[in-house]
Amino acid sequence: MILYDTKYLQLKSTPSKSGKEWIYAHRPNASDVVVILPVINNEKILFLKEERPPLQAEGIAKYCIGLPAGLVGDERKGETIEDAIKAELLEEAGLKADNIRIMTRRTASSAGCVSETITIAIAYIKEYKIIEKPIDDGGVISERILIDIERVSEWLNEREQEGDALTSSTLAALYYFMVTRGEKA
Image 1 (spheres, rainbow, N blue to C red):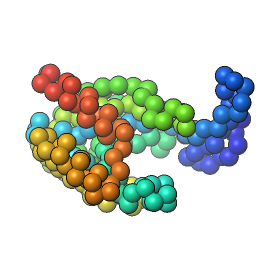
Image 2: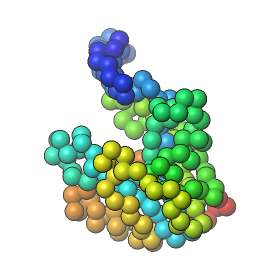
Image 3: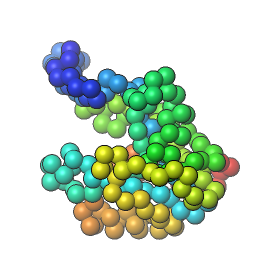
């Protein structure tokens, strides 16, 4: 049952196994979310420093460290996951991948709270060359930061110590990158 309805988000309820009402959020206009880890010349990773209103409203963090990401099919009807990966990488980073590797599909970000799932992909890019001026996604993206792969863990720890939030999808994408590092892309 739909309890509250907007263009991009619904609040719904469904009976749980115990029969009690379970309230959750749902995206009515998208079939999935893509999250892309841009790896530049196997030396650097591109991160986004974002200002996410829910984290700010609750006093959790002013900034959040994330990756290029977006909804599948919200603006481009009939869009495939692969099309969305390419589009979001170009829109949010201004980059085109030489090779894209999908690591996982249907990863639940917070399965008790939202029905949304994500597809995590690694975008291998030989040269850091901005093809199209990236968008700030309505003021959400405040900075794009290239970090040497060998410094990623240290840098993320520094960001967390400074009070920034880290997205779970960023950490999941890094996990997949690290466990497959050395494999042919």
